[in-house]
Every structure is written in structure tokens, then in C-alpha cells.
Length: 449
Image 1 (cartoon, rainbow, N blue to C red):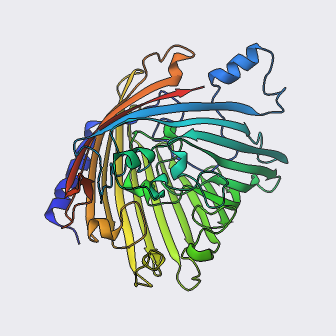
Image 2: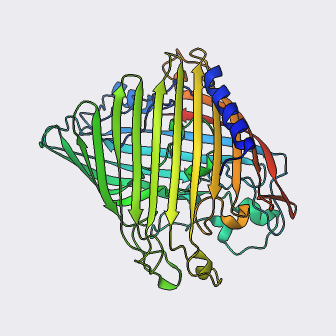
Image 3: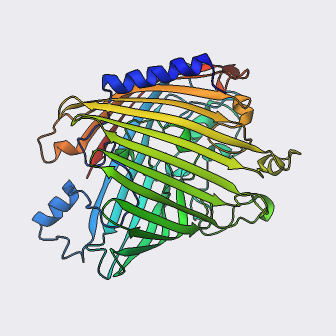
């Protein structure tokens, strides 16, 4: 049920959109363009490949492989002073929900080895291996990957500032490792096998594809990667579909259930409809039994996204999210007694933007996130009292040297963000106290190579 406050906040979101806050287009992926799972999009010609080309090592010499990557680092200040002491939750949701002590973070040093399909209508083989190092991988690990393990805040250390800093430790991960095979079927059928970034969500793990350093609650409520098989087919010029099967949410080489709990496969995919040159609609979906040792209750995700190019400078994106799970048993895993905490998560995110010039783009995001489910999503019912949380973020993307062949690969993204909740128990904790709101200032620098 919506209240008057919801109407007012949605009006604010509409005002942001109509007044021209926008994402950057200084880099090919810093935009509101739809993120569609493909095997044939052109990769950027970044400085590393340019240097290799000058040295006589081009893509032909590398058998069609493109080598590129980026470095992202940043800092977030929380007016609640981050967290220390029992019950501390730090800065939520943070870059990857782990900014705690108001400190500098080297989020990602990422490198990709990629061979893309040249013509999906002909037989071809491609793929990608992506490795990443920094403070983010500890929150990206899928089950069974032989690295440091998941959320490093679960290390058993005492709740104190030293333990808090440990949450931002540096780890390594193989984020993606897949093979693409295109088959001459109709307009082109491509089969992807391996570990790849999920099709779900508007925002991505790749920071170049997002307007802000911080992430939405919707992003943190979804899985990061999938391991399985995905088929992608271009039906016609305006319609593309994909569907596949994975081992489950962030499951790769082994099940991660408590006490040997078994997880089960799920189905996922999306439909992309290019309505006209200015408007594209995407419907992402996922369904499967995602609770350990439970094949009776299915988790269902519906994730519609609409992109609209209003003018040459102004773009708008709207994301909806609905997650239903009839068999959450996270409380049992943690020693509780609730075997099936029925509930759901839903959210609405509005993005809008205006490109002022090649140097500057102004960004805006509004989100309402609601949860009734314990153990699901970035913020649980325990945190919010099964209520709603609201977030408003404003920022810019600055490209200091947009005309320089190398300088155009550097971007700076400062932002200011305000989060608040109508919950009786505030989820924003610091110094053993809880609050109903949170104000953060953040900025990151991305260098593509």
C-alpha cells in the first residue's frame, strides 16, 4: 500500500528525470544503454591493446583475443561515522555492501582476456576469462571457488575497529570463465557455457556500466554470477531472447549449504525488445529452488527494465524488481526456529541523466526498496522490520581529458546519497546505536587500460 509520502517521493524522482540528471557516455559503457547478454558486441580499444598493436602484437596475432581491463578505487564518508562495536553494519549498501571505516578502498583491478564472436550467423568459438583483485572480490566469490571465501566480515573476529577494517581486505577471484559457440541457425544461435555475470539487474559488477560508485539495494538483493549454460538467439532486428540453466545463485564448483546442505539448479533468461530507436524494454527472469535441501519452494524473480532516449543528451531508465520465495530457511541455518519465512522483496529504481558536455555528466537515482523476507537480499526483514527503505543519490561523472586518446579512459564519479527508512528499527548502525537515516559522500576513479 502506498502512502502520501510515497507519492511525494515519486514526484521527486520524476522531477529529477525531467530536470535532466544523467549518466555519462564518456566511455562506451558509461551510459543508460540497455545491458543485454550478447556474444558479439564490440569490445573497447583501450590503451593496452593500442600499445600491443604498436609493438606488432594485434588481435590477429593473439588469435582474435582482446586484452583489456580497469582499475577502480574510491572512498566513502558516512556521517554516522561508519561502524565499530557490536551490532555495527557499516555503510549500507556501499560499493559492495562492505564500506565500514571511512577509508580508502582499491575496489577492483580487473583484466579480461576475451575473444568475441565475429558473426553469430556462422560457426565460431569465443569466450572470456576475467580475473579481479581488490576489496570487492571478497563479496563476489561464488561457492566452491578456491579463494579466501565469502564476506570477510564473517571471520569470527571480535566486533571492533580492527575487525571492521578486515572487512575491506584484498582478495582475488576468477569472476568469469566461459566459452561461446555460435551456430548457423536462423539469425544466429550462440551457446555460452561456464561462469558468467548474471543477466539480472540494471546495475553491474563492472563499474564502467554504472552511473554511481555506490550501488542500489536491488543490485545487492540479486546474485552476482551464474554457472551453467545459456542460449542466446536474435529473433529479428527488434527482438532478442536468452534462456539457460545454472547451478543456482552464486553457486559454482560445490554446494554452499550449511552442514552439507544441497542446492539445486535454476532457470534464468531475458527478453529484449527494441521498441524503436529511442526505447528499449528488457524483461529479466529467474526461477528455481534456491533454499538448501528444499525442492518444494521456488524463488521467483521478475526484473523489468525500460530505457528511453528522451533527447540526444537526456536518457531515462526505470527498473522494477520483484522476488518471491515461499521457503526461506536462513533462520534455521543460523540456529533459529523458523523453517519457512514466507515473504517477498520488491523495489522501484528510477535513473535519469543529462550529458552537459564531453567533460561532465550529471547523474540521479531514486529507489524505494521493500522487504518482508528474512535471509534474502542486501537488507533483511530483521534490519528493516519488514518495512521500506528509500534512497536518493545525486552525482556527476567527470572526464578530465575527453579528447586525449589515453585521457578519455579516466573518469571520476563524486556523489552524495541520502538513505532513510520508515522502519521502527533503523538499519543504519554506528557506535552501538541505530538510526533511521544515513548521509554518505563518496567518489571513485576508474582508469580503463
